[in-house]
Image (cartoon, rainbow, N blue to C red):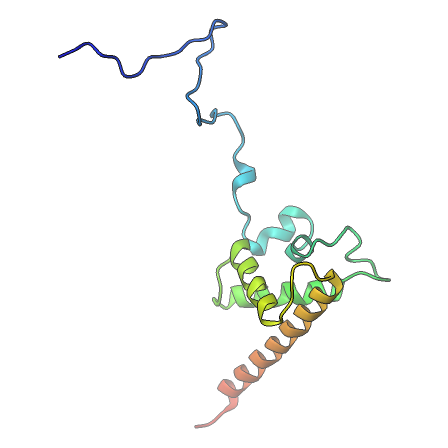
Length: 143
């Protein structure tokens, strides 16, 4: 057998050990990489998820010209859907669902935010009314 060394410890002149390429030091915080669950997003970030998704500014809840009703409707729809078990409690699941709704409503990313948010909130309001009808039908229908 030969005395071949495959790895060698590389030391710097100042006495610190050099990390191999691609390794992250253990003391770097990793909390920014963890995705906050959707239901905890507003508490963690201080604003609803829809505000960030639609790129609304800090005046989204302005009583004179904000989008507080539309944002509240979007948040209510997804909260109900998650609590009923219809979807996962993650931001990525909500993003995927919003993209599908935008595709159904024939909305494009470059459209104005007012149009996108208004159309999506109207569609979600329609879906919530349909869910109420289905719930009442199951509850009160006699077969």
